[in-house]
Amino acid sequence: MQPRYRRAFGCVTWVNMAILIFLLAAFLLPLPFRYVGSGDIFSEIQMRLALLGLVLILPGMALGAVLGARTYRVERRLGTRAGAGIGATAGLASYLLFFALIEGLYLLAMPFVVSAVLLLYALFATGQRFERRWRIVLFAAALSILSGVVALVLDFDLLGLLGALFCMAAAAAGGYVGGMGYARAGGDDMIPPGATIRPKEARRKPR
Image (cartoon, rainbow, N blue to C red; front, side):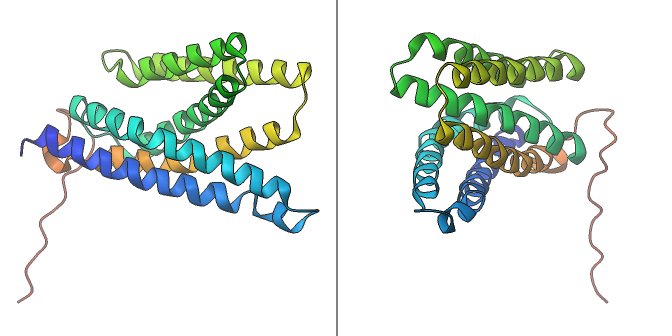
């Protein structure tokens, strides 16, 4: 198997791990609400986040495979930082877009569609400098946050607010794990030329 395809397969594996971390965090974060009041908040948020995670897993695997095949490894700190930031932004935009479409609020969904397109561009515009791509991610995050605030001002929904916050936090945790995989997948064959990443040293055989 060619190194870039091996990296693509590795990225898909790490996407699956990131989804599992997302679902775990989505369960643990609202868990205190299970013991407050009637527990309806926990049940509703848990159902929403689990549904969103299941809907996004297949597109996430496909994007992970394509991204892995097109990119080299990066330093772990850079990978986890980018993964957490992109994960948080993608979680917020996906949550708000998904439920805006379910509610039939198509005009409100447009900013979240733009935010998702900007995130995809930042991920796949590998010819651009990292600083420029990071600014695009920040702009996408600001657009989603501003649109979400406007939606809450027009029609406040406590479950929607808590769901968006928990989804963003859970997606950041999942993105952090996915970033670890992005930094490692492909092995030493996918270290870019001139990188500061050191190849693994061969283990010495015991005497």
